[in-house]
Amino acid sequence: MRDGNPGRILALETSCDDTCAAVLDARGMACSNVISSQGVHDRYGGVVPEIASRHHLELVNLVIEQALNEAGMTFGEIELVAATQGPGLVGALLVGFSTAKALAAGRELPFAAVDHLQGHVAANFIAPARAGGGPRRDRSETGDSIADPALRAVSPGGHAFEPPFVCLIASGGHTLLTHVAEHDGFRVLGRTLDDAAGEAFDKGARMLGLGYPGGAALERLAAGGDPHAFAFPGSHADRARGGKGTSRQKFEQGLDFSFAGLKTALLYRLRDLSASEIEARAGDLAASYQEAIVDSLLVHAERGLETTGLDRLAVGGGVAANGELRRRLEELGATVHVPARELCTDNAAMIASAARFGERLEYPAYLRLDAYATGERSPR
Ligand code: KG4
Ligand code: ZN
Image 1 (cartoon, protein in one colour):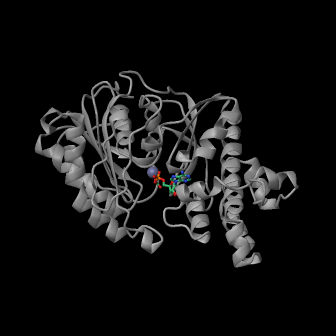
Image 2 (cartoon, rainbow, N blue to C red; image 1 turned 180 degrees about the vertical axis):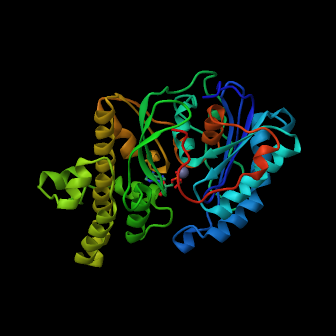
Image 3 (cartoon, protein in one colour; image 1 turned 60 degrees about the vertical axis):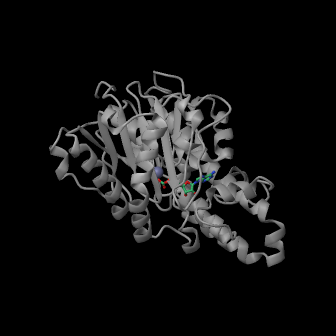
């Protein structure tokens, strides 16, 4: 592990459809965390890689400028540049990664190539925003301002949560249960064998006629529904009724996740209902479907704690922004750390945080580095 103090960091994150830049000061305090959600993929029902790359190109300079302005710094004061190297959409990654390398090379600064999943883990090291408010996230097609005064007010110094802990990472592309023994790596305990938890949210939302990405919209719809109205696979309600298929039993006892059956169960349930019944019971369907995903995540988190003998749990990834999951994590009886919502969904502050503790290369060694689409690059 590095000393955790490489000085002031500018980090970029462009692995999917959010164009993100952030500045961390020498104490590891987030001075800015600019997130520009492209908001143009909704009409296609998913992220269109080509369009995402083009939008990153349009937005990246504006977002960097804004991150520096909000931090009250010039680029001349930055001591380390970092960017997400992978996994993600290669065309999208290349925009942020190449921009960051070029910025670093221009001043012959050191550079840190960060694994996106390590970034989600490292969001837990950033000191939390003051109670009562997190940074604001604006959704715009133009990359307009995302001012975040609350984030600037994070308590100085120290890390929010220290290893060792179990970390549950649940996003649109990944669902992993990990053992974090050090600041600069993790060991995978379990992973999804099919869909990611966020994908399950997005696909369920789509079936219920909500837009993309659908996680937050499904959560809003679920707020008015009964989570026990329908027993979807993976939920406690389903287990209470003895609804255990052989293959599901395996997932329920192991550390790997599976969400594909849940999605199919919703599809069949919708087929059995008339249009007016679906409309009348949309809240119940959303709440029960959400409950099944959250139950599954909680059961696996609990099993991760049992397996490692640890009593400390952290979370990360866009699904960790889900209010029901955040509320029910308290049931686990462990010491739980939940980053601010804006540090759970994709952002560059988490990439800067990972860069504080990870490997960094001196100029010009990093110029040969390339982005990667799949896989994990974890030191341990
Ligand atoms: O970490 P993230 O921003 O991007 C990836 O690395 O994939 O995660 C995005 C995922 C999407 O699937 C989105 O629907 C889900 O996180 N998500 C949520 C919520 N907010 C975002 N899922 C459930 N409830 C939410 N409030
Ligand atoms: Zn992510």
